[in-house]
Amino acid sequence: MASLVLSSFCFPSQKSCSFTSSSLRFRIRAPTDSRFGGPLFVGFGSVKKRNGRIEASVDSTAHPLVFRDLDADDFRHPLDKQNTLLLRAIPGLNEIGRAILGTVTEQIMLLENIGTSILVSKDQLPELHKMMIEAAGILNIEPPDLYVRQSPVPNAYTLAISGKKPFVIIHTSLVELLTRKELQAVLAHELGHLKCDHGVWLTFANLLTLGSYRLPGLGGFIAQRLEEQLIRWLRAAELTCDRAALLVAQDPKVAISVLMKLTGGCPSMADQLNVDAFLEQAHSYEKASSSPIGWYIRNAQTRQLSHPLPVLRAREIDEWSRSREYRSLLERATQMSM
Image 1 (tube, rainbow, N blue to C red):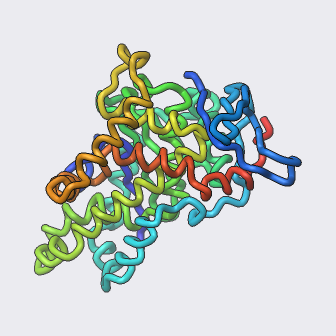
Image 2 (cartoon, rainbow, N blue to C red):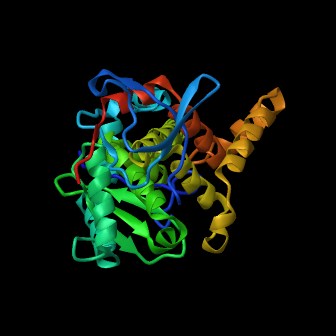
């Protein structure tokens, strides 16, 4: 069937999301790598030991690490795996997709984005082009085309049509809001959807819930059986792609800063935003929602959202950045040659 990806990076939205929808310094526990004769300090600046842990600050001039043999399942979120299996178990899902996604729909979306955006290349917005090429190299994936579109809504999304080269759209307001490293993390998030082959399921999540109501004799059934499961999967898929953003940024504060700015940031106050304070806010939300009443309110809050709440995404990034799984990936990585 046609493979069409429409993924929005930014804000949580109700049900189907709309299309319109620095420093580098952090601390990590240094993994050991026998290939380098001990702790892996690729691209780190000052190093010190505290509370039995080796901590290092990032040297922003160092070359990033590249994951040459990276597989999607190396960083796929467990909820993504679980909900993908549940979707695949639904009979007739591919047939429903063919009914909704036809050649005309694909062509409309393709021409709409190409006709209203600027194609990035080495000769057109070369800095953005370099960011995309580097991010794709880190994640071991072919780089898609990149377009910049004028819009006051800070957002990014991906379009992949079967048989055609996929492309990513970023809005000008997003470029203005984020630092260059943060913007590359957004590009990496979108690449994560392509790396994990989210195409078919993102198509359903973004279009089926709207188109289902227009299918005679099937609308009610689809809305009842699929909509909730699709949105649940989409939220899980976003957590996977936040991990892809971290793999490219290689600094959890960069990835979390993106979410913080999309939650309540603006260019004029960017220098006053504090990632650590935002993480404290995330922990406060977790604590407040741990009671039976809080758990109920939290589920009601997120049930119809296409994306997890930003504070929950920030907490997930923070936790994964300190996980053995993430450190193991760093140990396998090699330094990018520039």
